[in-house]
Image 1 (cartoon, rainbow, N blue to C red):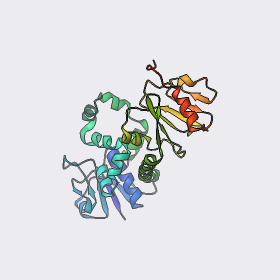
Image 2 (cartoon, helix red, strand yellow):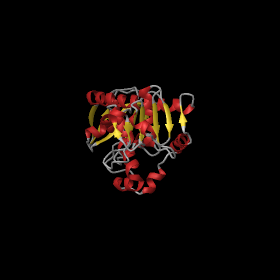
Image 3 (cartoon, one colour):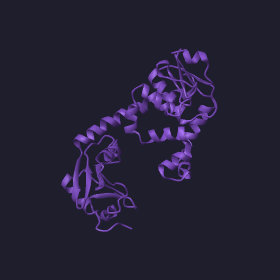
Image 4 (cartoon, helix red, strand yellow):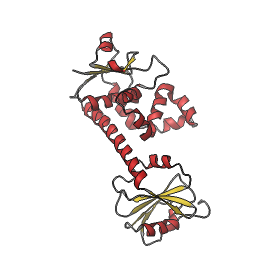
Length: 280
């Protein structure tokens, strides 16, 4: 039986996500939360994660604590399976999680240019609950309810990463960039998860004039008109009384049309929300 061994005590995203990905790739494994033994280190059927003081991927040892130049164990696991570069490109949280694990919250906050309290305020009670449940275990196999959740999470992580990469390439090929007065808008007709990889696409374009996205709405018929980067020169409240508009957020950052108007018609509509002066 293949084993995964990670450290006992408090669990963190590093070891937890490493185990999730390993479960999704390996298919079946026992999870042990304890200190590593010499037998574990030399056994190729034992995957050591965040424990053992060895980084030897050919022997399935993925610890980083013995070398300050190594990234977190999750990154080491992702490198081993060939997913690291794609994860860096597709997930904003991926490099941030590494910094949190190897540098801690205070240095991470300093590097981000924010107060440490912002990181703590953004922490999720869902994360805390699941990690606490994992922390309380010393052994887990397929009979435990958390096993399936972790395996599914690992599989979904790899799946969505691939889908985001494929979508980014599709956006590069099919999305139009249209002049709207003194700004620009992204126009996409992709209806399946229309926002997927849009943040990666905007980073690829790196154009500060792009202030609006026009995509099929994921909640009902029509287009979703979205203000990007909270650009104050765009306020969709200006469209609130237009007969083709079915919804405008009270802060003016998003609006939805009643139907999929022609490109010419929806661009004309959006142009009416581009202001000469920033909105209050």
